[in-house]
Length: 283
Image 1 (cartoon, one colour):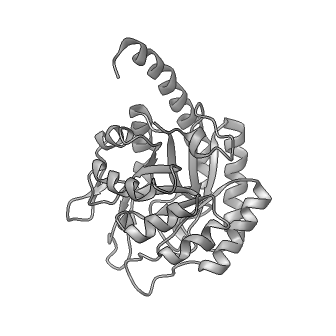
Image 2 (spheres, one colour; image 1 turned 180 degrees about the horizontal axis):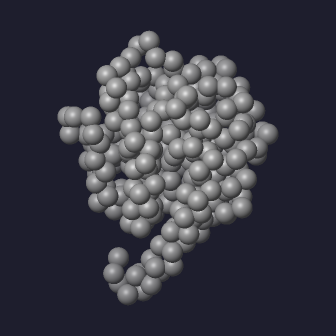
């Protein structure tokens, strides 16, 4: 069984602390990314949370071909490199094509495999070969156990893997979060992350772009932490309604203190309870 400390061995992350992957959905500007990075770095340091800054240089799977996709590879990586240096945080971003993996790995500490691409062999292999952490997002059409195939494509090259749950779709817009998936993902042997904001996304909810409901994100996050996860993924923006993507489900930066305070407390409570459950043979 792998753990957070092993996966993030270069960053001295603690298994006793909640891990947070968070930031604006897309790289809109350095200023927006810096505002979120500074705010979250301050909070996570204070609350003793392992923090990885997240933002995507390209939103390649937009509902509409005319939608804004973000900064692009060159400009996006320049922003991430600057954020990483100025705020002393590891960074995670999506890769969509195998050819992107090596240049992205020169900057990013974590390469994220988007849910729709989590069975793409060439992409998974290329990400694994970089030696960076690979965060595999479980596709909305996959069962938890199906991620074993994706894991097997990476492990010949690397064991630095995260598994992320982000909801399941059944042929209509609403996503369903089956929390038994978190238990099943854990059995695959790698740290499990719960994606609190993409789980409340409504793909195609506005016809030519996705909708969502951020009000559901924190309640579902609490449920995931109660079941037991290693970390939380969340899109965070200074002013979500103005964001170029996922405007309906990104969380307000100004509201993150109570959310993260509660999340860190719930993570700690679960760790304490888990130790007693293990002793009693309940797990």
